[in-house]
Image (cartoon, rainbow over all chains, first blue to last red; front, top):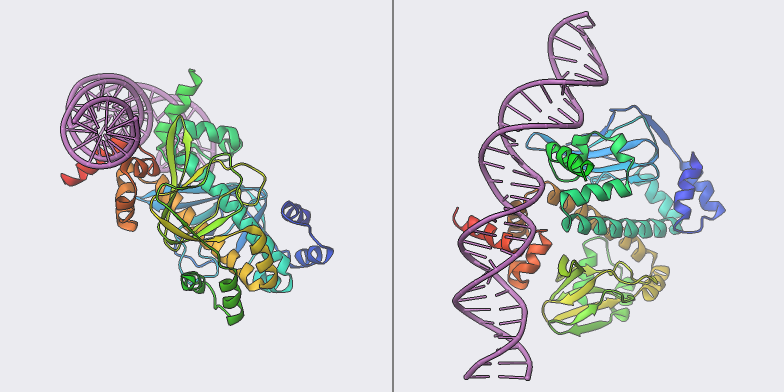
Length: 190
Length: 190
DNA sequence: TTAACTCGTTGACTTAAGTTAAGAAGTCAA
DNA sequence: TTGACTTCTTAACTTAAGTCAACGAGTTAA
């Protein structure tokens, strides 16, 4: 399992033996069952997660409805936005499937950053890469119709449609479940 | 002018005297006129900008139309997503007003990071903060109607409406200029 | 001084998403 | 096994955004 993280990190930089040992030593895993809630609205958070297996969904509640923010799957990092802060979470994290994660926490990370400056450099690079991807995805969303967004999702993350329910996908696409159902019907008849 | 950058950075960490000197020494400014293009689609980029005065708009062209990605104003950082890479830019950067910026480049930054690891740590923190803000803004966009988005913009960045034209604002909100005009009319009559 | 543009607005019409309600199929637990 | 849920679909209707076209006001350039 450990090797998955190293493989992920090695996409961005060369991993020295020393760093590899450090990461392996500090590795800490957790397993969750489908439906488990990792974080609730109002909770404080002191953990982030690297997903080894499974799927996590972030969502919040508006007008009594769950609005899906993001789906995270294997080899993705979930960082609660209030991690290490004294502010309550605005959203929930839920496992859509049985999920195995590597758990990190700010104290350990800061210690590691101090010991291995290379690791902090890596974190900066990864944060910047994720930021760029996020910007691109936001931009594409803005300039697309709901139908185009759905087609884009089909193309880029087809397995999400097996892993999440349609009303979760719909709110992720910024539309109502009925509209998604109609879009699917429309596309079949094309 | 230099003090603006230091003030910006000091929101995130304590600036040592040594670091202050380094930043002041490496500071490099440029001035642009309204309408100047800093980056074109297809260009390579080797510069990022901290805005001291003025306003920069990023946009791309889709179906022959300019789609505004983002507006950047005083005390914000503009980092072309292809900076330091050998990939061409997907978008344009244009000054909406006469603009004064502090210019950075990857080579200098890496040198600075090497000399002052504290600075790289700072960059990581800032990248993470911007990432969180971006996520929040993306999420709010998804779960809002065009009218709600416009009202939100009015509330959070009212001066943008003076600085950018309505069709630029419209594409930033993901709608057509005619729709923005109607939304404004609707709101006046409320 | 025109002529050509851009910008914002408006109107008429089309299209599709939102809303409300209902029903069929599947799941789960008492 | 039954009853309570959830999920997805469908239908009828409402609402608002997209499209296309036109117009006035302001700007720019020949």
